[in-house]
Length: 226
Image: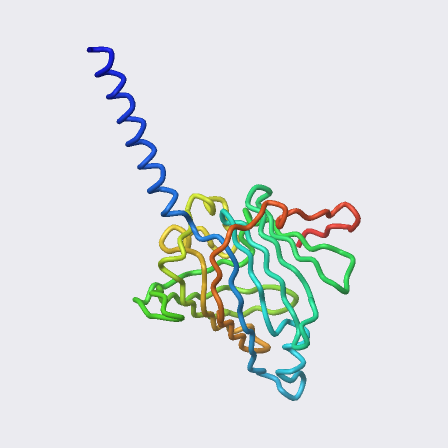
Protein backbone atom coordinates (compact mmCIF):
# COMPACT_ATOMS: atom_id res chain seq x y z
CA UNK A 1 0.00 0.00 0.00
CA UNK A 2 2.87 2.35 0.90
CA UNK A 3 4.56 1.60 -2.42
CA UNK A 4 1.36 2.44 -4.31
CA UNK A 5 1.08 5.75 -2.41
CA UNK A 6 4.67 6.71 -3.31
CA UNK A 7 4.07 5.80 -6.94
CA UNK A 8 0.94 7.94 -6.96
CA UNK A 9 2.88 10.82 -5.40
CA UNK A 10 5.59 10.54 -8.04
CA UNK A 11 2.95 10.42 -10.75
CA UNK A 12 1.28 13.61 -9.50
CA UNK A 13 4.67 15.35 -9.15
CA UNK A 14 5.49 14.49 -12.76
CA UNK A 15 2.04 15.68 -13.82
CA UNK A 16 2.55 18.97 -11.99
CA UNK A 17 5.99 19.50 -13.57
CA UNK A 18 4.54 18.78 -17.00
CA UNK A 19 1.77 21.29 -16.35
CA UNK A 20 4.30 23.95 -15.34
CA UNK A 21 6.40 23.23 -18.41
CA UNK A 22 3.33 23.47 -20.64
CA UNK A 23 2.44 26.80 -19.06
CA UNK A 24 5.96 28.07 -19.70
CA UNK A 25 5.68 27.01 -23.32
CA UNK A 26 2.49 29.04 -23.65
CA UNK A 27 4.48 32.08 -22.54
CA UNK A 28 7.04 31.61 -25.31
CA UNK A 29 8.96 34.55 -26.66
CA UNK A 30 7.80 35.97 -29.96
CA UNK A 31 8.65 33.89 -33.01
CA UNK A 32 7.49 34.67 -36.51
CA UNK A 33 7.63 37.50 -39.00
CA UNK A 34 6.75 41.18 -39.13
CA UNK A 35 6.24 43.23 -42.29
CA UNK A 36 7.06 46.95 -42.41
CA UNK A 37 6.63 49.87 -44.79
CA UNK A 38 9.50 52.36 -45.08
CA UNK A 39 9.00 55.99 -46.06
CA UNK A 40 11.38 58.95 -45.97
CA UNK A 41 11.54 62.72 -45.80
CA UNK A 42 14.62 64.15 -47.46
CA UNK A 43 16.47 66.97 -45.69
CA UNK A 44 18.25 67.78 -48.96
CA UNK A 45 15.63 67.22 -51.70
CA UNK A 46 17.76 69.06 -54.24
CA UNK A 47 20.40 66.34 -53.80
CA UNK A 48 18.25 63.24 -53.24
CA UNK A 49 14.52 62.78 -53.55
CA UNK A 50 12.37 60.55 -51.34
CA UNK A 51 11.91 58.15 -54.28
CA UNK A 52 15.67 57.89 -54.73
CA UNK A 53 16.12 57.11 -51.03
CA UNK A 54 13.34 54.54 -51.06
CA UNK A 55 14.76 52.69 -54.05
CA UNK A 56 18.25 52.69 -52.54
CA UNK A 57 17.48 52.07 -48.86
CA UNK A 58 14.25 50.10 -49.14
CA UNK A 59 10.50 50.54 -49.35
CA UNK A 60 9.52 47.42 -47.43
CA UNK A 61 11.10 45.12 -44.84
CA UNK A 62 10.21 41.55 -43.93
CA UNK A 63 11.67 40.52 -40.57
CA UNK A 64 12.09 36.97 -39.27
CA UNK A 65 12.56 36.52 -35.53
CA UNK A 66 13.57 33.43 -33.54
CA UNK A 67 15.22 33.25 -30.09
CA UNK A 68 16.51 36.80 -30.48
CA UNK A 69 18.14 36.15 -33.84
CA UNK A 70 16.84 38.26 -36.70
CA UNK A 71 16.76 38.36 -40.48
CA UNK A 72 15.60 41.57 -42.17
CA UNK A 73 15.12 41.61 -45.94
CA UNK A 74 14.82 45.04 -47.57
CA UNK A 75 12.95 45.46 -50.88
CA UNK A 76 12.59 48.38 -53.28
CA UNK A 77 9.30 49.81 -54.54
CA UNK A 78 9.04 47.07 -57.19
CA UNK A 79 9.60 44.24 -54.73
CA UNK A 80 13.23 43.59 -55.71
CA UNK A 81 15.49 42.42 -52.86
CA UNK A 82 18.15 45.05 -52.12
CA UNK A 83 19.98 43.66 -49.10
CA UNK A 84 19.65 41.40 -46.10
CA UNK A 85 20.67 42.01 -42.49
CA UNK A 86 21.28 39.08 -40.15
CA UNK A 87 21.69 39.27 -36.38
CA UNK A 88 23.53 36.18 -35.11
CA UNK A 89 23.67 36.25 -31.31
CA UNK A 90 25.82 33.13 -31.08
CA UNK A 91 28.51 34.80 -33.18
CA UNK A 92 27.81 38.17 -31.53
CA UNK A 93 27.72 39.77 -34.95
CA UNK A 94 25.43 41.52 -37.38
CA UNK A 95 25.91 40.88 -41.12
CA UNK A 96 24.72 42.80 -44.16
CA UNK A 97 24.53 41.07 -47.54
CA UNK A 98 24.02 43.34 -50.53
CA UNK A 99 22.56 42.09 -53.80
CA UNK A 100 24.88 44.36 -55.80
CA UNK A 101 28.10 44.02 -53.79
CA UNK A 102 30.10 40.83 -53.31
CA UNK A 103 31.52 41.95 -49.96
CA UNK A 104 29.61 41.06 -46.78
CA UNK A 105 29.77 43.66 -44.03
CA UNK A 106 30.19 42.39 -40.46
CA UNK A 107 29.61 44.36 -37.28
CA UNK A 108 30.87 43.18 -33.88
CA UNK A 109 27.91 43.89 -31.58
CA UNK A 110 30.05 43.61 -28.42
CA UNK A 111 31.71 46.91 -29.32
CA UNK A 112 29.95 50.24 -29.05
CA UNK A 113 30.76 52.62 -31.90
CA UNK A 114 27.47 54.52 -31.53
CA UNK A 115 26.91 55.54 -27.88
CA UNK A 116 23.18 55.88 -27.26
CA UNK A 117 21.01 57.16 -24.42
CA UNK A 118 17.38 56.06 -24.05
CA UNK A 119 14.45 57.84 -22.44
CA UNK A 120 11.27 56.00 -21.48
CA UNK A 121 8.24 58.20 -22.05
CA UNK A 122 5.22 56.20 -20.99
CA UNK A 123 2.85 54.08 -23.01
CA UNK A 124 1.03 54.18 -26.33
CA UNK A 125 -0.79 51.82 -28.72
CA UNK A 126 -0.08 50.70 -32.27
CA UNK A 127 -1.68 47.92 -34.36
CA UNK A 128 -3.84 47.14 -31.32
CA UNK A 129 -0.66 46.42 -29.36
CA UNK A 130 0.24 48.07 -26.05
CA UNK A 131 3.64 49.70 -26.55
CA UNK A 132 6.37 51.48 -24.66
CA UNK A 133 7.20 54.90 -26.11
CA UNK A 134 10.98 55.25 -26.14
CA UNK A 135 13.20 58.02 -27.51
CA UNK A 136 16.94 57.88 -28.06
CA UNK A 137 19.91 60.10 -28.84
CA UNK A 138 22.89 58.50 -30.60
CA UNK A 139 26.29 60.12 -31.06
CA UNK A 140 27.34 59.53 -34.67
CA UNK A 141 30.96 60.04 -35.70
CA UNK A 142 31.39 58.33 -39.05
CA UNK A 143 32.63 59.16 -42.56
CA UNK A 144 33.17 62.81 -41.69
CA UNK A 145 29.78 63.23 -40.03
CA UNK A 146 29.53 64.16 -36.38
CA UNK A 147 26.02 64.72 -35.05
CA UNK A 148 23.38 63.52 -32.60
CA UNK A 149 20.84 61.25 -34.25
CA UNK A 150 17.43 61.25 -32.55
CA UNK A 151 14.80 58.52 -32.82
CA UNK A 152 11.42 57.53 -31.42
CA UNK A 153 10.25 53.93 -31.01
CA UNK A 154 6.98 52.15 -30.30
CA UNK A 155 8.08 48.90 -28.66
CA UNK A 156 5.51 46.12 -28.26
CA UNK A 157 4.91 44.97 -24.70
CA UNK A 158 3.37 41.60 -25.56
CA UNK A 159 5.86 40.46 -28.24
CA UNK A 160 8.21 39.14 -25.62
CA UNK A 161 11.98 38.89 -25.76
CA UNK A 162 14.55 37.70 -23.23
CA UNK A 163 16.95 40.34 -21.94
CA UNK A 164 19.64 37.67 -21.41
CA UNK A 165 19.83 37.18 -25.18
CA UNK A 166 21.29 40.67 -25.48
CA UNK A 167 23.61 40.81 -22.47
CA UNK A 168 26.66 41.29 -24.71
CA UNK A 169 24.95 43.55 -27.26
CA UNK A 170 26.83 46.75 -26.50
CA UNK A 171 26.53 48.45 -29.90
CA UNK A 172 24.29 51.51 -29.54
CA UNK A 173 23.81 50.47 -25.88
CA UNK A 174 21.21 47.96 -27.08
CA UNK A 175 21.50 45.82 -23.93
CA UNK A 176 20.34 48.85 -21.91
CA UNK A 177 17.13 48.95 -23.93
CA UNK A 178 16.73 45.16 -23.71
CA UNK A 179 17.05 45.22 -19.93
CA UNK A 180 13.98 47.48 -19.57
CA UNK A 181 11.69 46.55 -22.48
CA UNK A 182 11.08 43.90 -25.07
CA UNK A 183 13.04 44.61 -28.23
CA UNK A 184 10.53 44.40 -31.05
CA UNK A 185 9.72 47.78 -32.54
CA UNK A 186 6.45 48.32 -34.41
CA UNK A 187 7.03 51.93 -35.37
CA UNK A 188 10.19 54.02 -35.53
CA UNK A 189 11.02 57.56 -36.63
CA UNK A 190 14.74 58.18 -37.11
CA UNK A 191 16.74 61.30 -37.94
CA UNK A 192 19.56 60.05 -40.19
CA UNK A 193 20.93 63.52 -40.97
CA UNK A 194 20.35 63.38 -44.73
CA UNK A 195 16.75 62.27 -44.27
CA UNK A 196 14.10 61.12 -41.81
CA UNK A 197 13.17 57.46 -41.94
CA UNK A 198 9.69 56.22 -40.96
CA UNK A 199 9.40 52.49 -40.29
CA UNK A 200 5.84 51.24 -39.76
CA UNK A 201 4.71 47.67 -39.09
CA UNK A 202 1.78 46.55 -41.24
CA UNK A 203 1.49 42.86 -40.34
CA UNK A 204 2.48 40.60 -37.42
CA UNK A 205 2.54 36.86 -38.11
CA UNK A 206 3.07 34.37 -35.28
CA UNK A 207 4.59 31.17 -36.71
CA UNK A 208 7.32 28.64 -36.12
CA UNK A 209 10.52 29.66 -37.88
CA UNK A 210 12.66 26.72 -39.00
CA UNK A 211 16.36 26.57 -38.14
CA UNK A 212 17.10 26.21 -41.85
CA UNK A 213 15.68 29.68 -42.45
CA UNK A 214 18.67 31.07 -40.55
CA UNK A 215 21.30 29.08 -42.45
CA UNK A 216 23.59 31.19 -44.64
CA UNK A 217 26.79 30.22 -46.44
CA UNK A 218 29.33 33.06 -46.39
CA UNK A 219 32.24 30.99 -47.69
CA UNK A 220 32.01 32.30 -51.27
CA UNK A 221 32.23 36.01 -50.35
CA UNK A 222 34.82 38.18 -48.60
CA UNK A 223 33.75 39.58 -45.23
CA UNK A 224 34.67 43.12 -44.23
CA UNK A 225 34.48 44.18 -40.60
CA UNK A 226 33.03 47.63 -40.05
